[in-house]
Length: 215
Image 1 (cartoon, one colour):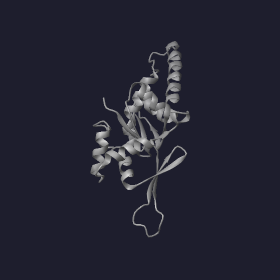
Image 2 (cartoon, rainbow, N blue to C red):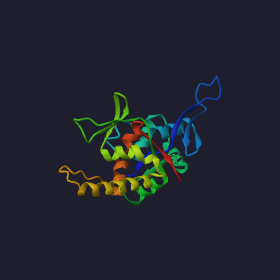
Image 3 (spheres, rainbow, N blue to C red):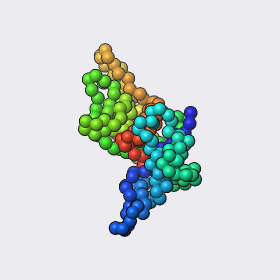
Image 4 (cartoon, rainbow, N blue to C red):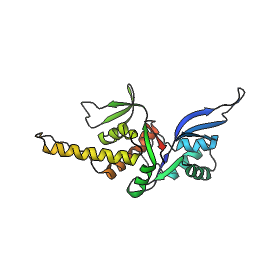
């Protein structure tokens, strides 16, 4: 298992400072309550770290993959830039399981983008995210639920543990019911978090979420 590279911050666009400018002065990334102004090379590395929607499901979004994509984008030596972005908090590397995943979740939060498009009678367990008539990503119920509600809490770990507790309570009610088709929700916060992190490359590459720093 390799560490997953996750870009942090919300892209705010290029910044031009002169009407005669042929290229942006910088590329702006909102980070917490401030803004980073990146050079074109820095932005290229940060941007490719979001992944290619056509490829993220085929390979892990590792540092090796990101640096290779940066070279393809014209960055000759992406390694030092990658390290600098990590130091600034604009890139992070996280293992999707264990204490490293929890630490990431304590310090970050996911922010939903796009629209929830729900499921269909033909695929009850598949929930779509995107724009009207244009789904960008399809996820299971648990990831969809976290995508909808996690941003309401202080950080991702608090959100996941809250959702896990609610699932535990719902499971208890379901077990006591007379229904024949009982449904059991995932109530282990670590399992929920791992599932969300494993879905993160698809959600990020399709602009269904961005990640913000919370501490």
